[in-house]
Image (cartoon, rainbow over all chains, first blue to last red; front, top):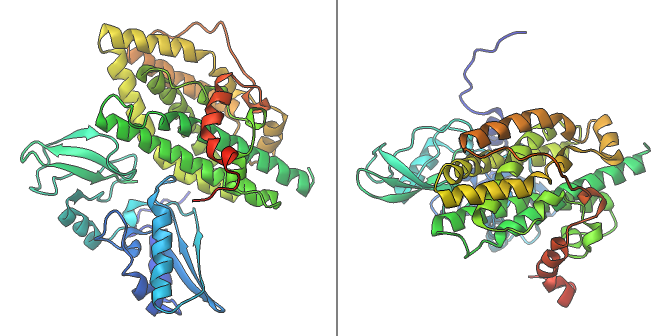
Length: 177
Length: 255
């Protein structure tokens, strides 16, 4: 067995997603959908979140493929509606949104810039951790690492609830998954 | 198996897994606004959402396989008790908080191992659903295991309640590891999980947690089964009358 010692800079599926955008025949549609934000975290777009997977023009129809964050996330249907609305507003009458389950969504697809937007919005970003190994968590307000967990689940499925022991700020933590 | 038989078998298997998820998800959702405190209320309902989402993914797949116009809602809302094929453990009334957390812990240990095995399924769709479920179940298990320790090694009252819950639940666990003809044939086809093979690791993990929680392992002198064949406890019918009320009262209702 050969051992691959290379450290992947980016998960392969995320690299492929970015390539799809770079090589897309309809780059203007990707730019258009950059305006569609997460309904519950309106500072990051569906693209930055990793939900937006593919945009294709098939004959007269624009087909948008998204992947769900959490299985039961109620925001998914709102995201779908927002995608359709944005494309309709730009004159694309025939739009279809498809859902693809695999590769399963991961917070490691978020760029550093997107993670910083989360922090500025008051949410501790997931960093490069996974459901098995958490990354370092810092208070989004003061940067302290002296924290306590209030609950494994916060205001939405993707977040946990923490409080900072240094500045007393209670905050959401976007769980790595 | 012919292609048609195989299609029908996978459909039934997807419905079983959907039933497990829907029934447990509904039980958890019953805690909404009844949780012991706000954070716990949120946690219980978040886990409920994950399970209901899981049910939707399995039912949607079954609906596509059926090719006869059925939808995920047909499976959730338009079948009666005897057509539900969930494992009995999932349908038991939520009981007190200790009962809910003990059940959740026993299920989480099982669900995580089950979904990890389902990742290897030859059926790409089932494997895709499992990939989502594995990540979520890791968080579920972390929390339910914490509660086992906190309740078991907590006050005399919490210890007593948790011990009672584990005793009352124990006889429903052997069913998790039993395969009928359908599942045996799907295991042979590389589609289904050989749940019997999960038992040793599950028992070892549960035993370790119970010991740490100072809870005695129950005597295995009774067991109940039948969910996969549609033979349920009386509580499922009551639950479905609540879960299915809107579709029964207003057939075809959409919102």
